[in-house]
Image (tube, rainbow, N blue to C red):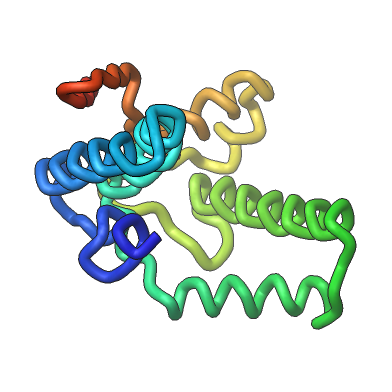
Length: 164
């Protein structure tokens, strides 16, 4: 776990080249120590999501971020344990609120704003209200998409990541 999420791990890379090298090394190590199934899962699922964070510049998560989100979750549950289905609904409601805040940022409402790199996605409130659900979803998806790995090949002798 430390090699994936700890200090100096792939999760803390800020450079895609270094990230890809670390992923390749880890995948080989996992392949040798725990087998192909986990190595494939690591490359196709875990590394894909982490690489998206590195590519988008969102790899600067800190324990303060985690503690902040933990506090928000505790407030939402009123500091009480919940059964899993209830917890899932609570988390979904928090995610829905975050998505609403993203939408607000797109038309300049609320306390959040889009980064300068995403300024071309800003819309006026009139434009926003005149869009169909399909158009709104397309704009949101395009604005908040993360580059992902589209093809992964796992070989015994060599691991190759193909990024598009």
